[in-house]
Length: 93
Image (cartoon, rainbow, N blue to C red):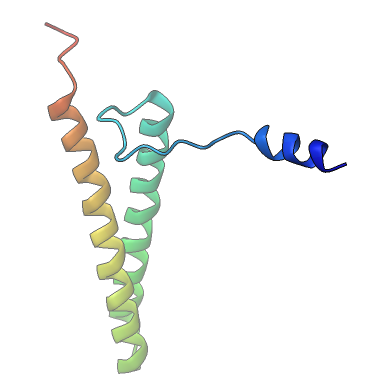
């Protein structure tokens, strides 16, 4: 029975990982990143609005921090779009 278990171990697929992601955004990636931008913008607007409405300073501070976090995420996602646009060749030329 041991020969079978050795064969099964050898048949497991090897996973190769990329050292860094490719410099291209697929249509599916683009759509997902757009959704993430919209979600983060909605969270920015809501947390900013409710922080302004809140009377409790602790809760107001927590909402402000959440707003800043979503703003950082939004900026980071936007940077990915800008980097992808700079590295991809112009198809209209």
